[in-house]
Length: 455
RNA sequence: GAGGUUGUAGCUCAGCUGGUUAGAGCGUCGGAUUGUGGUUCCGAAGGCCGCGGGUUCGAACCCCGUCUUCCUCCCCA
Image (cartoon, rainbow, N blue to C red):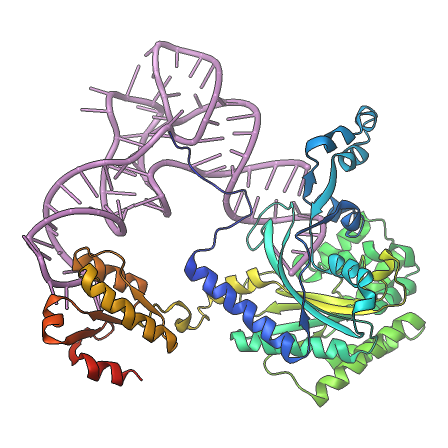
């Protein structure tokens, strides 16, 4: 008796049609990175647990898939820790490896490990799956692909500008009707926290602020109070609730708002620099906004923070990124600045599917399908098929000499453009019959005339 | 991790206050049509009613547990 097959929650199978579309997205992204001189790399799907743990904050650690020790290694289980209810230590003693949670931390490890083999600034892109033990939801999976591009070893803001242009090129080429690239700067957030006199609670302050567009001003105020911020702080930041996202206006507001904060002004300068470059080289389709409430990846971002949202669809961010000054420091290599972005291919896919943006050509079938009448004619067809493949055509020969109705149905469902018939009748006359599946018309050709018409 | 929700044929779903043999559409397969796809007609196969336990004379239906689905929160792509 067979049980119903299934796959773990938050994972997906990809049918041929869907896979074609996914590969199309990946290739557009990879091509764009390559045009800018980024080089592809790959890293293992699992890393040492110690490489990953502690890099994503407490929440992140909980979402890392761990790989259970096997064989003799199960003896390493720390039963003492279990008795003392030290679950974290117990868990660590059971697992030495874990599935990668993102591509950035493994990349930092990669850069430190191979620093002598790399030329800096090093520009790499990486398209691989990552795993998170998250609760699946709309547009959220436990296994999904990230498409990351990073530049390490250069603190020039031109890298930020370049990444913004790559995002713009990719999303424009994929045909998204509109998208907003939101940009902020960790230094601006630090300046705000400094002004409020709560520099050490910057994460509490800014992650509450980050929810402004979702829960509104009242919600943010309520949440800030719950987190213990008093009226002085609330009064200080209240002007931030109404900042125009228009870049020049937001900049001039921040210039006066943060004038007494040295670090804040540094952030404003950086944003201003990026904005000026955008005037020199404008975006194709993307709209750029300065959003001071944007506060993502604060565990490691130190400068620019980027997030991209598609317009006209209900969907979380489709790209995210930023600058991290000391990520490789965690692995012992100090003073190497990096900046990167990550495309959320799965979400981009969902949006393109919803808006029907995929090119029709992606799921077209073979150019020619030879029907199979008998072993003898099939041998002849196989030779013609091979010749056609050598000239770049996609060609199939139906494997069995079953009734034509079945073969025609196969051709139809496979999306074959042409069906070639060569049976006993054709063989005795020295002809082939070629049917155009779209129009339904079919023509009889002298074999030699047909072959030369294909050249 | 917290709260809610869902599960019946390959897919989408009916199934009454618990009552005999659980239905439909689509799809699949066969035939009408032994050399021609999409349409049409006829026929057939396909179900431990998510899984485990409980209540009951009797459970797809009620209760508990578990897994799964989707949603909100947390967090994130």
